[in-house]
Image (cartoon, rainbow, N blue to C red; front, side, top):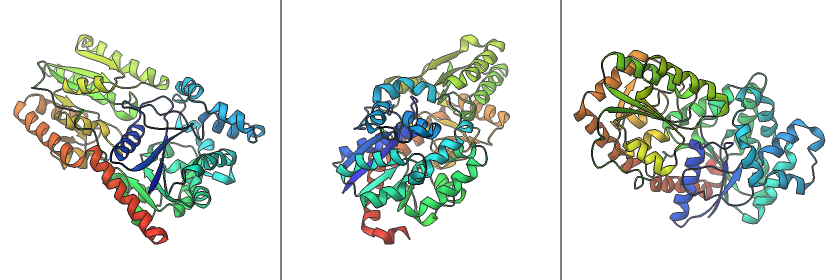
Length: 432
């Protein structure tokens, strides 16, 4: 069975979807599966070896130009290839990361229209690139690419699988009428998809209802981490007690809540440090500045480490330096990869009780949950763990055991392969 997975680059960011897709492809290849990972939009950026191959398809520059400038919709093939070069796309990716979802409504609809929209030539280029690979199954990276599902199925004779990766946050932010039109096009194109794969039960259920997807075609395959790389420290980190945040620095991830909770802890007499790591897009530079200013105003500038981006060894070292991990998102998170990485390192977590966190942290016994947005409850949960070494140790051990038993990259690959086998064996009947 030949599988081609398409992975959408995130304009220079290290994003959870890129990490998951790259890790899944690498694990499948390691298991001897015939899998090819192909980048879309921009080159992938991951904290592990990039296993994607070939030219970037649906290159972000040419897609934008075809949408914005009608006279370029018939640009020569050589020019489109030049615009999709890895070096050029990488060099301009930082500008794309500053673009807001609110500004991308018309472009999203343009892509979702597939062969009936301005991206017809880009779709033809993608089909041309895929034909020599002769995939039996083609895995799309998200719902925003669903406009290509029908044409790809017809041209390649392949079954279509689509990963569900938290598209609701982006699509819900689109202005009208683009939001409603995007939802309509997604529901219409869903008939061409044999199976959808969500990484949590929460998002499988939410996406089915939110986007009017056929629930019988939605599968759940949990995320997987490399538990051999994410090893616990030899013993508890030295004092003082350290709280860690590792995620994109932006309002949606809730750093401001953690900053306020940390200030409240210190004012309440708890001696602790805060360590903050993660990518900051240019559009969020002001938000980071505000967070640092609040720390300075509280007189705690010397008690917070602003680590910035970390590579894989740096990420492991960061997690192993913590007593408690917390990313108090203000929206229901669909994935939660950093939670699993913390669990693999035996670091207990404190997370809001929404989205994927109840099944990742609550059901596994890996940490404490608090009502979303409740600053007092967040502060209290952090205080409980910081003051109870035995409870921290117990939650850390539970999390590590769950990561090794249920959330490995090898298990993610095996379960995904079973979905592919079911789709191929079922043919048209598998779609229901």
